[in-house]
Image (cartoon, rainbow, N blue to C red; front, side, top):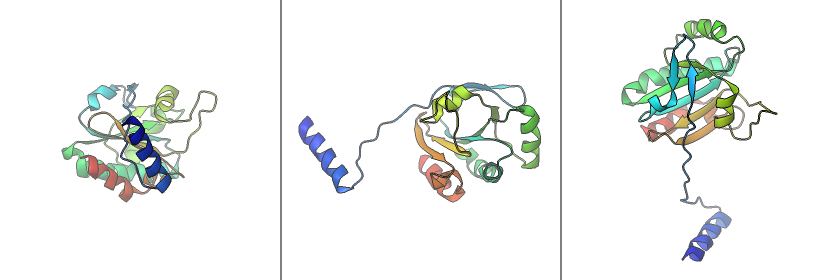
Length: 171
């Protein structure tokens, strides 16, 4: 029967049909400072649908998506959605504070470090610590990664309507 499952899997792959195999990956643990001096642990987000957005304040697409994520946060926070921004600005709070004020962002914003990006962004290494921003990670209520969306690759990174459809399926 293992052979027949493997053959069926091979047939479905060869025929171009989607397979029902779904391997869940737990979202990596993190503890990061917030822009205003507090701390956020990823374990405090368990039971929520989480949108992590890796960004920098100077990025035009990040500025647009930050404002759009705020709207989604306000719309769905009572249903269990949490948006968490992870800033990778070198200036840390000095860059983040005016950004939050300018775009009226109320969701938590953390001061990221390379280790969090390495844990969440496949293919990134300490030797090549580059990725396109905004980079959005969607996490389900069980703490598993439900999607990764990189600007320039997956439309959900900059198309808020597509991202909202993904979020609604998890709420």
